Image (tube, rainbow, N blue to C red; front, side, top):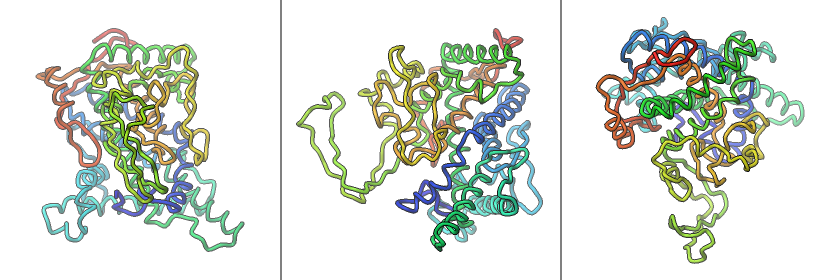
Length: 465
C-alpha cells in the first residue's frame, strides 16, 4: 500500500475512504484547472527555450522537472522557476536542507519500494541511506508548507494565494476546516470530521506522486511517439496551429483554458491513445464488498455464451486488474499495437458521451467533457476496456487535471517546434526498445533513454525550421 507518510484517499477503504474522498475531491475543480493550464503554459515555454539551446538533453529529467514545477504550483501554491538550463541541475538547496525539493521527491519515488518495506532509521545505515534521507527531507519540506497554509486558512476562511489561486492544498485545508465547523454546529458530535497533519501529508504525497510521476511518463511516451511517426505529429500540429490562429483572431495573445482547451479534440484523442498503449499504472487493485459473479470467456467467445465458466468472488476478496492486458485485448481494440488517435473520435451518428456515472462526485465540473471532446469509453462503449484512470466511484480524482496539463504542454511545445529523434537514434530500434523494455518502480516508463531534439518551426509556427 502506497502510504509512506500516512493514510490517503487511494489506500483508505470503506467509511474511511468516504471521509477522505469527501475532503480531497472538491479541490479538483475548474479553478484548479485554470491554474494548472496557465502554469503549464508558462513552464513549458521555459522548457522549450532550454531545449532549443541544447542539441540533446535528458528528456526524462527535464519533463519530470516540468511536471514537478506544475504540481508544486497547482497543487501546493509553490511557484517554481525553471532551473534546469544546465543538464542534471536539480535546483538550489535551501538553508537547513541537504537536498533540493526536486531531488528529494525524485529520490523518494526512485526508492519508494524499500521506503515502504523497511524502517527509515534502518535504511540510514544501509546502501539505501539516500532514499531514507530523501524521505525525511520531503517530509520536512511538506510539513513546513502545510503549517504555513493551515495558519493562513485558520486566520481567514476565505484565504486564497495571490499567485496560485485554486491550488489543491489550500482548497483541501479549507474543505477540511469547513467540514469540522459544520459537524460541530449541526451535530455537536466529537466524530472525526477533519484531517490530521499525517492525513494531510499522506494525501499531499499522493497528489505529488500522481501529478508528477504519472503525468511526466505519459508526456515522455507522447514525445517519443510524435518523433517516431511524422503523420501523427502532423495531425497534432495542424490542430494546434488552428487553435492558435482562432485565439489570435479573437484577440488573445495566449491560449485560454475557458476558450481553447475544449478545441484540442485530436490532441486529447492522442493523449487517450498514449495512455491506452502505455498505461503508466500497469495494474489496479479493487476490493469486493459483496460476493461478485465473474464470467470467464475467451477473446472470441460471444458474450451470450452460456458455456462460459462462472466463479463467485467472496466479499473481502482483493483483485488485481491487468491494465496492459486489457488495453491490448483485441476484443475491444483492433490492431492494438498501432498508435491511432482516430479510434477515439466519435462517429458522426454517435451521440455525445455522457459524463462518468459516479453518484459520489461533489461537483459536475469534476470530469465534465464537452460534446467536442472524445468519448471516455472506447468504441463501442465498453465498461472496463480503458483503465488508465481506473473505473467506478474510485476512478482517479486527477483525471481532468492530467488532461489539462497534457494538452497545454503539447500545445505550447508544438507551436514553435517539432520533436525529432536525436542523432544516432534509429526508428525501428527505438520502437523495439519502447515496446520491448520498460522501467519504473511504481509507474511505467521507458526502460531506455531515447534521445530527442527540438527542431524549430517557421515563423508563426508554420513550416519546418
